[in-house]
Image (cartoon, rainbow, N blue to C red; front, side, top):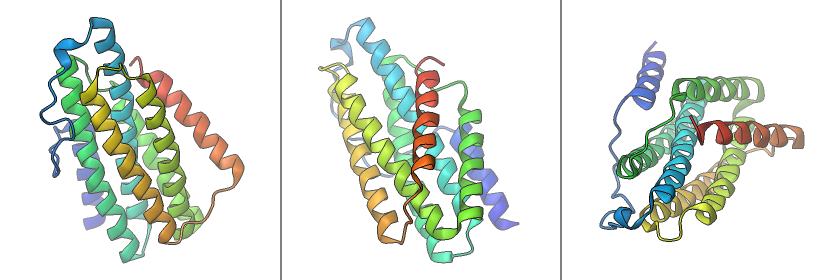
Length: 207
């Protein structure tokens, strides 16, 4: 019951609360928003909204897998990663506000979908498959963030600083999952994950 209540509380805070980072925002001290044109602000805002959705999904994934496992060490590992992802939520929210943007209107849906996928993967595949799912997710997110580094306006140094730190964190999370015993996911599942991520990215860019 305690685990279930914690899970519900984390879900509500992820989707509806204002987030506070435990680490300094990588964009702290960078004041370049006024140098961006309206079109550049709109594009940067859309990309940062997509990044925010990615972090909502990461929170859901980690939380679901922590609930599903009976391995206390793995649960602590997942919850620690989840806490660090909260920094990403806070940073992207702050940047969206500076750009005059907003978070996705579909965040409850994104969270529910990622939570369901993470929970089923953990229950059906066990801890090794659960970690493999985390590792593959983080690899795909890292590649996605790299593409955003190429698409963000050249003079949007604040957004670039945030994305660069997020990318480094995601790479480390993937490496930690692999070191903890992650199993490699079958190729069809990896392809399906990329397709699902593509749909999410396209929708969140606009909604």
